[in-house]
Each structure stands twice: as C-alpha cells, then as structure tokens.
Image 1 (cartoon, rainbow over the protein chains, first blue to last red):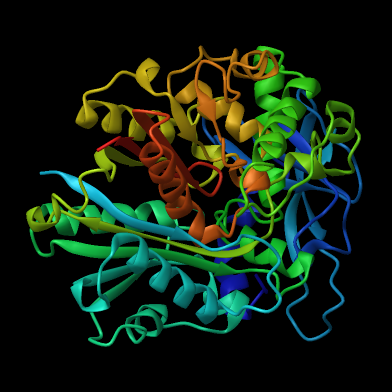
Image 2: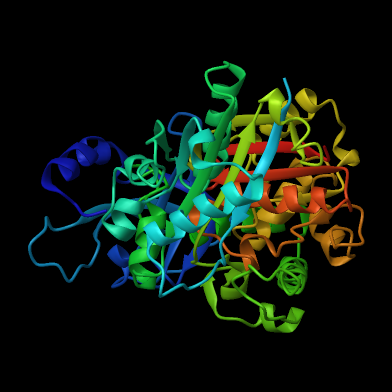
Amino acid sequence: MKNLPAKYWRRNQQWSSWIGQEGTVVTATYVRIPAEEYKLQAPYSFALVDFGSSLGKKELMGCGHERLKSGDKVKIVWRRVPHDDQKSVIDYRLKLKKI
Amino acid sequence: MKIKIAGHYTTKIGELWDQGLEDLLAEAVHGSLKNAQLAAEQIEAVFVASKAPGEFNHQLHLNALVSQMFVHYPPAIRVEGACTAGGLALVAAEQALAAKRYKTVMVIGAEKMTDQNALKTTEILSLAADQNQEAGSSFPGLYALLAQAHMQKYGTTREQLSAVAVKNHHQAMKNPQAHFHREFTLEQVSQSSLVADPLRLLDCSTISDGASAVILSTDSSGVEKWRQKPQILGYGHAQDSLSLAGRESLTALKATQKAGKQAYQQAKVKPKEIQIAEVHDCFTIAEIMAIEDLGWFEKGEGGEATLAGKTAEDGQVAVNLSGGLKAFGHPIGTTGIKQVAFLAEQLEQGNYELALAHNVGGSGATAVVHVLAKN
C-alpha cells in the first residue's frame, strides 16, 4: 500500500490523540521478511499492545530494530518509515518504543 | 436437497512458468467437465474465485474471462475473500443451487502468483490485513503473533510446530499434483531461516500457481451417472474482526469455530466422526489451531497431538493428506476449491466416508467449513 496523499491525510486524523499513550505488549513478533513497503526498516518488531479499557488494543510497528516482547511497557511515538521512493508523501507513523 | 460433486479437477500446483492465468483456468474448466462427463453447455453458471488477479497478473474482469471459455457464455461471478475466495465461491454456488436458480454450476479458482518477486508478493498478500489497523504487518507476522500467544498460553513448542510441516511434506510425497515433493526433518524445519519470530521459512505455506474446479449439481437426472460421486452434507461460513486487535481470543479462531459448528449441524455429524480433513495450514500454527477449533482436540493439545501422529494418515483423523497448503501448495483463490476436489477424490476411492474442508481468509477473519460424504 502506497501512501497516497488523501489516504495518508484520512489515516492520520486520530493519530495525535495516540501519541504518548502507554500500554503493555500482549504479543509481539520480529518481522525479518517484510512487505516491500517496509523493506528498509526490516527487521522490526510488530506488536499487539493493550492500552487499557478506555483505548483498547492496537497493532503497531516498533521503532527501528528494537525488539519487543510480551509484557514490555511501551509508549506510542511518532517516527518515520524509511522509503527509497522520493515522490510519495514522507511517511510518518505511530510506532512503539520501549519505556 | 442433495448437492453432488459431479466433477472435479486440479492442475499441477507449483511454479508454472509455462502457464499463464488463462491457461490454468482453461485446463481446470476442461478437466472438470471431462471428469463429470458433461458438455460445456450443461454448465448453467460459473463462480470464479481469485484473490488478486489485478495485482498479480494485471487481469481483472475474471468472470468474463472464464465465461468466454464456454461456447454459450454462461453467467459468471467472481468472488474475492482473500485466502477464502475459493470457499466463499463454493458457498455462493451452494446458495444459488439452494435457491433453485440453477441445477448445475461450476466453481473454479485460480491464482498465478509466481510472476511477481517475493517482496511484491508479500505486499499483495498483506493487503488482506486491515490496512488502517495493521499497517506494517505481514501475513507471517500476524500468524507469528497468534503463535506467540498460543505458545505462551499452552506451552506449544517449536518441535510441535515443526511436526506439522514434517507431516504435511511427507504426505505430499504421494500427491502427484503437489508443489513440493521433498521431505524434511524436525531439525531442518526448526533450523530454517526466521521470517517473523517464531515462524520460520518451513512453517510457511507456498507461493504457488494453480487452478482447481468442481462441478456441483442438484440435477436429479444425473443421479444414476453420479451415483458414486460424493455429496456436500453441510457447510458453514462465519466472520470475525479483520484486525487481531478486535479479537476476543488470540489462541482460537472464532470464525472457524462458528463455521465448523454450522457445518456439523447441517450435516448432522459430530466432529469425532470426521475421518479425513483438509485444513487451512497457511502456517504450521494455523493447523494446530484448526484441529483444536474444529473439535478434534482440546484447546492447547493440538501441537502434542500432531507430534504424537494423531493427525497423520493412520491417526485419529487424517489431516492434510494432500500435503495441505504447506506442501500441496497455496495458490490463494484456488485453495478452498482444491481442498474439496482432493477430498472428493478420496471419498470416490472408497477409503473414507466423511470428510471436512476448512478454508480461512486472512488471519482468521473469514472461515468456510464444508462437510462431505461418500455418495
């Protein structure tokens, strides 16, 4: 999936409310063979995180090559997804960082 | 109403450089007609399954492409539902037969995957995940999350995951249509390269080309001709949250449990009566979860049962005798149909009385289960 500008804009409407939220990793993997879109970041963590009863669960990539595992305390940060495509929207996303 | 599987045909599954999407479809059309001893004009409608012919092959409007393979251009519909495209096409056909719109229809699935490189294919496959909620995931990555959860809750081991791959590759040795005819040891599977921890290369199903077709009929005039043909006793179709974050459980696929229950009820059979099954082993953990969710083993006991040989050909239930998605192959839209075609052949040969096919879409958001019986 490429980040078409309109799609990127629609997707990021709620992101500001998530930045800084803290949660606990329920389950995590370390993706070594990614989809083409994420090849420059691999390997990276991908985790399902519980942010509590009011926010619920969310699935996110980890920052850089940091390894996450079940039980880790994490917070949501704003980080770039590296691409070799110079024409599309610069791709910032919500990601997980270990506290 | 009795739905007979009047004919079936599956192409060789594999990396078929010399065959395009249309070649595979044509082979399955003609092969299934020959198997059913039917003329093309006797097919009243066609249900076509394919996950991503646009992305893989730059070919959309697949229903028309298939219809023009018949002299009379029967009405044709394409069904898409990720890896359950085949199972859903079967359901659509069965509903059309139940509504008495048609008496004899063809259900055909095809996918030509190997013209793209592995990273591009991984990207196309990941489109079946929730693009807003699961960005950054891959299919091995999503099933890896399920595997981690299953291992954490039940103590499922690396060796038990490997046992699924070893069994399915062993069983594929007898299937001439299978993509892979190569056996592996537990150690080889356990030491293959990591894709998404804990899943390794040999935990993953194949990227394959292939097509399969079945002809379903309620036509009573065919009763005598198709007396020895198997029938569909029941089917179920259920859904769950597309994203894993929305699931009640990460150690069971609720859609599989619900679809299985529906199929068993309609067929009036109990899980333990099933003798042979093709289950959706897109990853080794998926087979372990399936044999639990379909009621053959208690939750958490699927891995141990597999390692103990209870799902082998001579076990409690013969699971993925074809080699499954793991070794027979997983040309996405074809899979749900080739499962039924393979089981139909097994039932015709007289070795089994009751069979089950289990087809899953994505990481478990869609599931279709069929119960089949010998004539």
